Image (cartoon, one colour):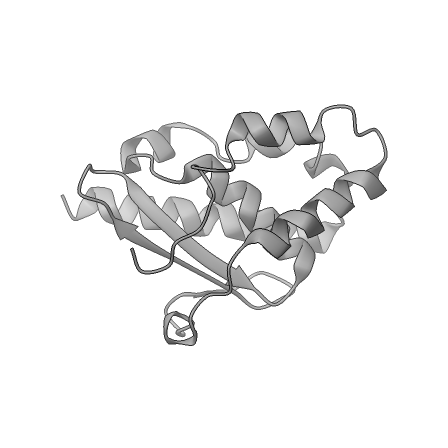
Amino acid sequence: MLAPHPFGHDITEQSLIERFTGLRQWEDRYRQLILLAKIVPALDESLKTPESELSGCENRVWLGAQRQENGGIHFYGDSEGRIVKGLLAVLLTKVEGKTPQAILADDPLVLFDTLGLREQLSTSRASGLAALAAGVLQLALREVESI
């Protein structure tokens, strides 16, 4: 793997739901995003290329993917912003290891609604989250087209 991370393995959708369930205040959810951001390993500088940098985000964000032998996709990414990096962590948890077809068939942003994260995002962060999701979908589509 080019850039390993715990998402989809040690941290799952279910563990995120358990972590965020019961958090009523946005500040508590915000703290959880920052804690998730701290878990995301820094991306090696060699992977922070112009091709992997996403546009449409407030902070610089890099997103890449690598096809696995089982047909799933391993995603990796990083951001200079803690909240964006936390949002990226949630997104990576949702899509990690899934086949391109499964990713394209399921809206990755539904998990953000389940966790109560999307409703409180500022306009610029919501746009950044949409750019992250679009980047994941574009990488999955690229994998489908290469089959």
